[in-house]
Image (tube, rainbow, N blue to C red; front, side, top):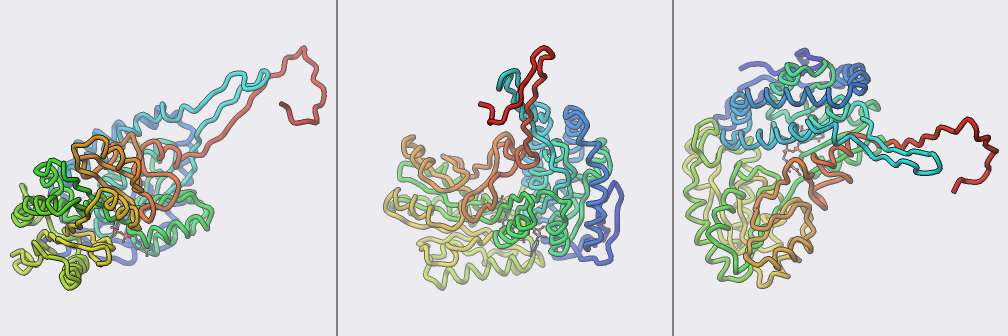
Length: 495
Ligand code: NAD
């Protein structure tokens, strides 16, 4: 077992209290993690406040240079980062590489910060008056991230926050801390001045300290909905800017005209990739018509039974272990509830040989048919490898069902009919929509965010919204009166 320390102003700092980080594939402790108290969080804040003014005053192009170097270093050490992710999270190595690459896209976008911060300018906005608006950094900002994307979700936040001229404090998930520290070391190697980026480990106490600290001007949070709501309410009460992304229940609608082979093949990955522990995972397939449902299940069931499952660190697997014993038991409990409520259990993940044959937190893929909207397996976010098929008679019914759900993160429709796809995109009350794209995670130059209980706040994560979130606007009006023109006092508002 090795130790994982806080990273503050370029130095490793041990905490008074530690917890074990567990490898979910073996159920064995692999690291001892230092946990932050309020005083440790304050050290990170103090270092950030000291370092930020000089960084703010650098030309954005100089800040972008650090991001260029950081990108190169992330690519150099990608295998090492992915091995850490896989060992602590359980996801397969190829999937860890996928998340890292999607994360690096955000570093690339941040390299364009001189262009993004250019602002707006009006010559002669009034008589001899020029007006311009620019974006200025907020100061010290912080991010709190979930276990399921140890590299990608933090990379949604800090490259742009830093490139905009802020200092950033990251509180990663205590279940997967090592990738965050490794990336902090790479930022240091890339030449980021010390103090601008710190990693503090912990859970509720550390997060409360960030919420309470008046020096922290904004909080980005990604995690479950109850915590997202609490952080949004606590942070905004303190006058902070907050974006808090929460949980999800993502539906895919399958229309009778869809290419069913293609729909089934992509749904398998979207439902069971990363053991379903993705906020964009498809967990409900809404089939329009019984014939569509029968044909889809005929294609899904054999694939679900044959998924290759094992320790994520082995090559060539489809799915790894779940994050911890509690989550594995919770998902198994939902399978029990679904069967008891009358859903048809087509494939039962509890029967996978690894469930009893390994100390790790494994479950096979589960497929339910004839799920109804009153069942807990339909209503709740399960966050595991469980796909529910709901049968409806019409496309309108499918749209109404999705719009009635509390979550609105991602959704998709499978169809060959362009008109139906367009209508779906217009009518659906969900923040990210795919048309024959089951995981419509936007590229880094668009922004990511759900609607309803999937996001609290006004601005989405990364992309153009991140520039707005991590800066505040200033409008400057300037006039240089002519020496020859004597001006008289004016008491009315100039028009
Ligand atoms: P979580 O809410 O348990 O934890 C997220 C973060 O909050 C962690 O850093 C954790 O230490 C901290 N935290 C936990 N409880 C806290 C409390 N009471 N007070 C303050 N901080 C607390 O979420 P998780 O289990 O790590 O991640 C899974 C959840 O995240 C799922 O619900 C998933 O849908 C969601 N998620 C959402 C998105 C999105 O973009 N909407 C992306 C990834 C994950």
